[in-house]
Image 1 (spheres, one colour):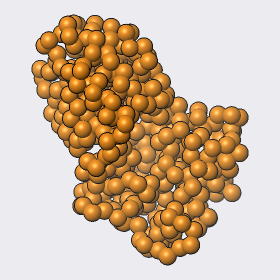
Image 2: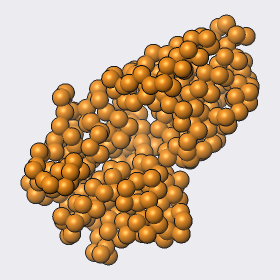
Image 3: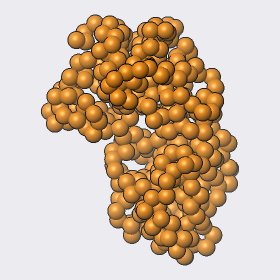
Length: 364
């Protein structure tokens, strides 16, 4: 394979490219990084990820607000490093701003969420303009379909997220009788349905316990929201432990000891990274059928409507009493997760970069 291009990868302003502060996008950028790539993002108060070059966005005096200053700061780094491709994550406005600064430099936009709620991509006309100006990459076919909804006609690449198996902690051979929820503790993630289902199944299964890892936001300083306060009361009554925000490595270790990981998302997950990580760590997964989750899980998991608590409880109860089935699901899940191994996705990403650069002359 040819050498990797000089890529400058631009994080959203709120992402932090550091092990103890990273959100989902920063983690994925770190996993998929290629040789010679430089990541730019907001300045850090702690050391950045090792093994990948990081440049904090320079402070630049600019009249057009916070995002205008961020774009100007990234532009300054582009002038310094002269990349062959700029890859912007999840911010159409930043991608378009950089395209305006550098009309001859290939710019790609990687969409991790539903573009229909993003600035400069809410309408079909805006999305068609966006696709003419920059190369658009979706992390799932579901995101691709959302981009082309409402009559939008645009070419959108699909490059899924990945899991670095070489960096995963070792999973337990004999797993705990643990029901685990890991993720943001918000209503959209269905964590209240998880608690309600646990309240139904745990009283008759004294050998089992349940745990919630996460907070309203990523990071140890996440606020105590009204939803969280109410959920704490419900979780305590259901004997579900709430351990709060944990570093990502700790979350993976918990997945490696849990028998069952539940991802009962109400909102359509654009990809479903928690499900991929849980399968990679060998857990049996019970997931919502919404968004991109079926693309990630395939036939390796069990699907449950997050708003049908009795049905979710029955599914959990059946799995809790069937260790042979859980073992089969563990093997199937790990095989499914291997399709998203970082080593595989990095090669696909390098080829995609080459294709984007070759096709750039067709852009406006």
